[in-house]
Length: 440
Image (tube, rainbow, N blue to C red; front, top):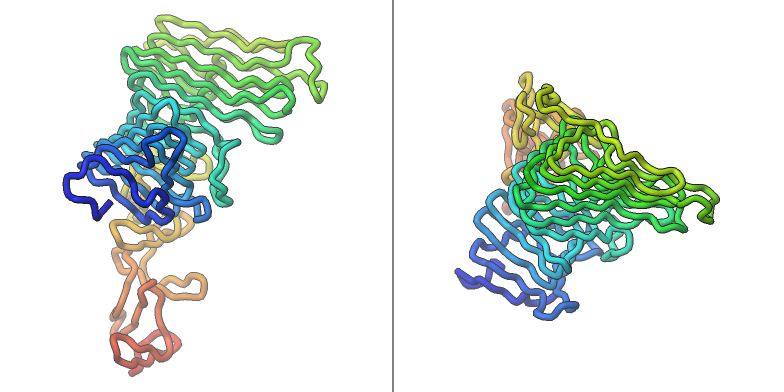
């Protein structure tokens, strides 16, 4: 893309398979990238034979691009920055998609096998996401198993008609939840409809069905639009709920339906009859101008009942400070907004990645390497890792090249590792002690 003539708006990708993408950035003038002009014939970006999400394809601020007839393999992480828009048309993403305040749209013939993460300020607009996480692969052995096609981290907006369907369960894996809201508020704009279905599990499998939506404490779904959510069925296990978790739903129209379980006298493989899902679980409070909640059908039906939401009651207090979600630490301001970037607390520096997760280990920030210990604290001074010594300056950046420390000269190679013994540097022979100190 870097070699395209300035101002290029449409590109028929050549070659049609680009296995190594590095960290590519789409030009803001480029409006359309074609893998081909024929449905079912795909160009390919990245590779399933390389490490998962080891490369990036970034849509920067100011870009509005459509990618058609393309397989984006699991080595590529797609990033949609704030002020950017990506539309996937008749394409499949085998790797993660991270939306950092931008807008994502998909056509009816597009799919994903991984997770789309909607971070603070993001918009999902006119999207049809039918997950194939369990039954479609690019052959990667390093890609993790996705439990939901969409994760929400922060305040996001739904515009137009958005449909999300979790993938079916397998013999040993539950159906996917359609959406998991880890934090923040999902706002469904007036005139918009969000339709979400948890993944079904076919009658012969003993796995659970996926819930339509799973909410976290302090999260909300609001807006004048319409929310339709359905739990996935499971005849021999627990079916999914229409809405599960803890939170508040305050929308114009809500239709929530629990997943079905086996009818009475239905002959299942295990002989067990599962529990149907609730329309909305009791820990989710609900208010809607038009409300329908229906428990799933079966010998053990789900509940139709809802817990009313009274807006005169104080809203739940937002999460503040450090919060751990699924093993990852996040930090929230006093207003509940999620912190990203550098954070100083009690004279200790931390780095929150652009999706909010606390950085651990080595982290490249603006082309400088930093190291964060197991608590997330930025390290300074000498650091020994895997038999090599590194030096991190007072401000945290990893030293490279020559460095004078306490009156002694050291040389840190291109990887940052301290050298010892005899070295030829820029054509000159130097000798370093085992401590790394320059001898001659």
